[in-house]
Image (cartoon, rainbow, N blue to C red; front, side):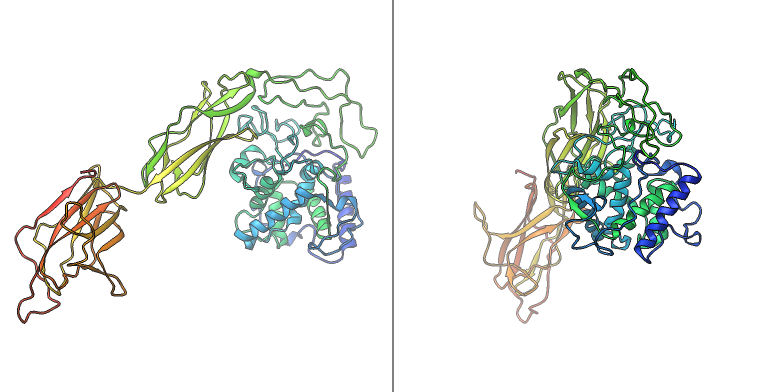
Length: 585
């Protein structure tokens, strides 16, 4: 994932010999434990590791510096770590906090993976030198982008642009991005919001560390097993040397580490200070001519340096390091992304289960205030809701058109009512987001009617036969509609009747109002048993739905026949009087 520069091991036999010697010495100095590299018998079966083009980093170059042979001050400890120790065992505060937080988060959702934070620290060391020694802001975002070289097939893998330059500023080829060096296509799948700010930013150590943790735990891996751990590391970068290097740092950090202030971590040798690591390093076999950093839009081509880069005087130093790195041209205002704004989206309101008729639309603006095409925009649903975009997605990424606008897919309300929001952000940037408020209302019915026509009668002391209703909305069955049933007086302004028929709750208590009733999938509702009561007469029952549709029906209580049963039921054959009214009537 990261750019391979710094104190680079020599290729071929020398590389193998040095790495083997370092690993052996490290193992010997640390006592017994799991092997740094699984034995041949323990290796995953053929085909179990990903192919070269599926690695999270795109098999970008990486640091090959090995840890010192002397171990940290606290062997075998990973809690209550010392506040002082060797420089190499120090990890910047924000970086260390991100690794430990990721371990806790993953343990809460995938405990079987047994992800150790020291593995994240080892990968972070090899990929970016712990975010360039902890050069991050208070939120954990790198002070300047950490970019790998263009994966253009010239000494590196060939991976053509997949994100239109949204993450890596290169619209021709992909580059590994951020402190954990994800290539854009992998980040699209595995990106996480580790710091809870509502964004998934590969340049933020909390987001990147959590994404790396999820990626390493993919499938049913148990990282306490050597073969599973090797498999996970190789899926990050499919290289035996990479595995050996990560394993050596993993074992080193397991022996102890300590926290150092952000920005004061030890950098691997040869680490440059620019935003593009490609200017400070090369993968073995790559051209020794420095490749300039791309402009944010990948179009401007800077002039080459006036003098060729001198050969390194120190064989253990960087493979090449230009004395005068070429400047990166400033992008013109017309091609610089200044932000995104609402492009005329109206109120977002929908009934539960319905699609929102309004579509969310965003416009990207350039430095002159004009429209900017080919800008990646992320639409993300936030809040406690089960609303989703078409296909059940809560997050979608789209690109603006020639007019600078892009419209999100249709948004569909779930069953949960209430407010939520949709945020639109320029993907991979820290530019302000546009927030859209949305509301899901309860299902409604515009009509409700009784399904039978027979007169509803019962003797005093008995119960009425079951009474069924059907609710409709726009001439279709209205399912999931909340209904209230109330025994009402016959006044001009009816109120709850305290006499006559009643409902009975589970504890035997008599009530004359039932709330939170709901229609079934066919829009039907069958009331619970209605007790006639002891007083003969004609009474009225009213049903009201969410949306205001009502229906009134008459219930007739007849005097009990002399010697009749108190629990008998009875219905007449004459048509009863009932009146259904539409919403608002």
